[in-house]
Amino acid sequence: MAVLVGKPAPSFKAAAVIDGEEIVNDFSLEQYKGNKYVILFFYPKDFTFVCPTELHAFQEKLAEFKKRDVEVVAVSTDTEQSHWGWLQMSKDDGGINGVTYPVVADTNKTISTNYDVIAGNYFYNENDELEAEGEMVAYRGLFLIDKDGIVRHQLVNDMPLGRNVDEALRMVDALRFFEEKGDVCPANWSEGKEGMQASHEGVASYLSKN
Image 1 (cartoon, rainbow, N blue to C red):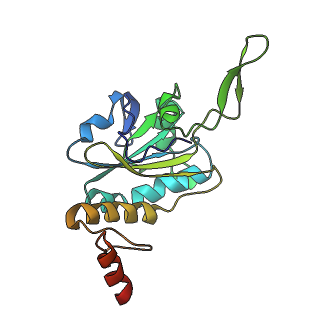
Image 2: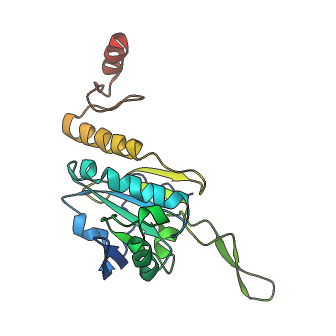
């Protein structure tokens, strides 16, 4: 698994559904560079079980992300037509109607591959025939990208394990706190708590008070 933290987020241009209904063919993260953070998260498949719970959970917290200057973007290897169809289905029927953030179609699987969250592998057998080992869909990868386009946090879950959206918000808060205050965030830090100075004296001072 590639570690992308500290590196530029891989760029892409792909079809996506935005605002729950409009299909665009050239969606890119470049539009956010310089003025927005991005939470980019991958999920395995449309029309499944854990996946809609995650997409709805991010939508429920979307206002919290927005007020922190964060854009939320979802990606799977399904087509934009599949995304669009799923977005028309009600939540009660297992759909994701009501999701307004972009849902990107990684149909050729290059985005998932570049972020190293693709679950399967292609290979040629002894007869020089192309085969696939495992499903060529994405794990539940999540990447926090700063305003300069640098990955600052990544998390990858196996397919049965849904993510905690509040933890994604906490990581955004931690990054913003560090950028604004210059203090680092100790274990279990959350918004409203003290940070610590990145020095022996700063650590000793923090530990003496906690």
